[in-house]
Image 1 (spheres, rainbow, N blue to C red):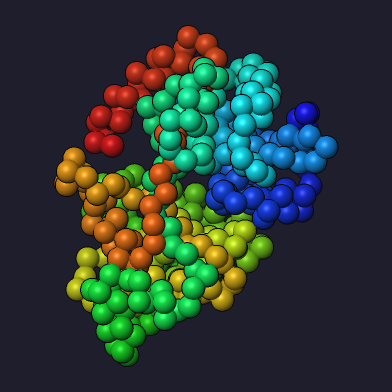
Image 2: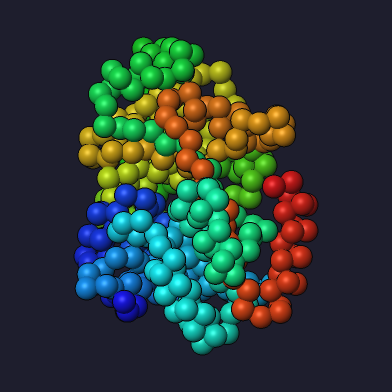
Length: 338
């Protein structure tokens, strides 16, 4: 078993296509996006006669301490194993020392269970005080017919989709031009305030479009009512999956957002996607009764689907400075009520 850098896009993407568990955060173009954002990116493969796992590494530069981040990875051809993880960790420790970083952060796509948690614990990882990408997602199987998808929706959701379809003043626009991005930006900040999250920068959104548009892997959906954009979404299509990565909407009783999601689902089916990932949700528990994302989570669940619960993000400290980072991130998390 050996680890080698992969510099061929086709080899990387073909491998991901064969893997069951993956998101666009490990795609080649996500690496290109991070390069546009000024980060260092490496792509490595673990070989045992054939390619059996890949891991994309991003060097995050932060005032609190630089670190290596593996977004939603490593990605395995078959089931993850201790042997492969040991090989990956050994390689990352050497890279971390060379790059003079404080720690390694891994946002795994392994399911949340004792066996997987013990695997990381036995390797020396600890739970991270921060999450970088969603650890609980809502996903929808697109392999069934449109009629079946409508049938599986919550009754109220299905009704609002049908009502919006009949409303001639509602229009859904699909595009990647600058005008639609500006429309998205107009309502994005309002959405961030309403749902209490920190919005991504304009450069972030522009570079995301640049990275994925060259392979026709991104679309901006804008929902208009009488010419005014009330709802918008940036959807990434990768490896037979669609991802609701960015969303924005204005508070309104007009069901534009419902038709917008239905049009996204139909577009994903046209592209041959087998799954629609609504991205992050909060669990429906008593402690989350007043969570700012509760309403958004209920909205997503109304379209049918199932919850996917992944392991918490894990950190591997490389030196004592890590504990200062740990304390800082814990305090920031508390301040933001995350």
